[in-house]
Image 1 (tube, rainbow, N blue to C red):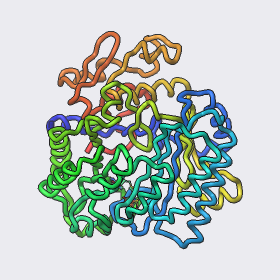
Image 2: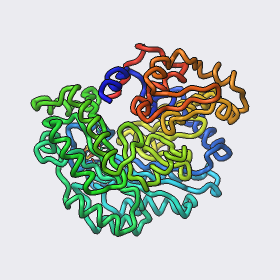
Image 3: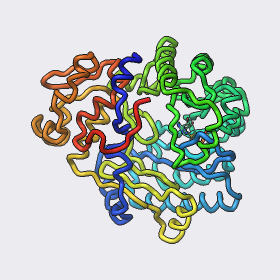
Length: 455
Ligand SMILES: C[S@@+](CC[C@H](N)C(=O)[O-])C[C@H]1O[C@@H](n2cnc3c(N)ncnc32)[C@H](O)[C@@H]1O
Ligand code: SF4
C-alpha cells in the first residue's frame, strides 16, 4: 500500500468541491445569488441542507486550520446570533416551503462553546422558517473539552441526533503541544451517553502529523479509538498552513513526524480500522459496517459536500449561514465574508454577507457530478451520466476530455477497470481516487496550481 501512495502522491485537487474554492470570485454578487436561490427551488436535489457556522472557540488550538475566533464578550455572541437569525429569515423567504429540510450541520469554530440558549434561538428560527423532514439529520461538531452530559440532554431536546467529537489525539503531551484542552469527561462515557440518548452516526476526529506524535503513539490512538466503537472515525492529515494560521509557527519548537512517518500512520489507520470492524469510506474516513455511510457506499449512494460525507437520502442543496459559510446549490457556490466582524456589519447594513461565489455552466455541472461519483462511489457509467444531462457518450468524453491514456498507469497497477460503458475504481484505487477523478477534470493543468499532496 505504501508503494501505491508514494507512486501516486501527486499535487492534484482535493475535489471537496468542483470547481475548487480557489475559483470562487468576487464578480459573483448577492443579486446573482438571489436568482440562483430562486432557481434552486426547481433544481435537484429538492432537499434543503443547512449549515450554521459558529466561529468562536474558548481556546485557540495552535494546529487549527479552521475559520475561528477566540471567544468574544457575551454582547458579541448575542449580536452574531442575531445576525445569523436575520440571514436565515432573508434567505428563507426565497425558498419554497414545501421543500423539506433533510440535514442541518453546525460547525465552526466550536458551536458548543456558546450558551445553549443561543443555539435554541437559531433552531427555533429554523423551525419557524422551514419545514423539517421527519428523518432530518441534525448534527453538531463539538469540542469534548466543554461538552457536559446536560448539554447532550439540551441538544437532544432541540432535535439534534448526530454529534462529532474533535479528539485529535489521546495523549496529553500532544494536546499540550497544540495548546488544546483534553475532554471534560471520558470520551467512552460520553459516546455511551450520546448513544443512550438516541444519537446516531457518532464520529470522532483524529489528526496525524501533529507535533510529538510517533508511529507508536498514533497506533495507540487507533486502538483506543476503535475500542470505543464510534460509528465513524475521521483521521485527517495535519495541514500546515501558517500563512492562514500563524499560531502554527508556535509549534515549530517541537518535533514533527517526517512525511515517511505520516505515510506509515495513514497506512496503519487503514489497516487497523479495516481489521477491526470498519469500512473505508474515503481515504481518511472510516465507518462501522452497519453505519448508514457504509451502507450508502456499498449501494453507490454516498455523497459528499463541504460538511463531509452523507447519503443520497438526506443530501440537499446547501444554504449556509454565518461567517465564511459556503452555500452549495445545484447551479452555484456562494461564500460569506470570512471575518465575523465584517459578517455582522454586512448583515446589519445589507441583510446579506456574500463575498464571492461561482456560477456553474451546464458542462461544469456534469463534470462536478462525474467527479463526485468517482470520489464517493468509485464508479461511473458514461451513458448513464451523459443521459442525466440529455447528452450522449461522445458529448460526455468531449466535455470531460477523458481519454484512457490519462489513466494508463492506474489501469496497469489494477487501480481502475475500464470498459466501453463504464469505469470502476478498485478498493486499492479508492486510496488514491483523486488521481482518477483528475482524469475527468478538463480544467486541471499539471503544475499550474499548488495543490496539497495526498498525504
Ligand atoms: C471545527 S473543528 C471540530 C470541532 C471543535 N472545534 C473541536 O476542536 O473539537 C473540525 C476538525 O477539523 C480538523 N482540523 C482542524 N485543523 C486542522 C489542520 N490544520 N489539519 C488537519 N485537520 C484539522 C480537526 O480534526 C477538527 O476536529
Ligand atoms: S480545533 Fe476546534 S477548538 Fe481548536 S481552535 Fe480549531 S475549531 Fe477551535
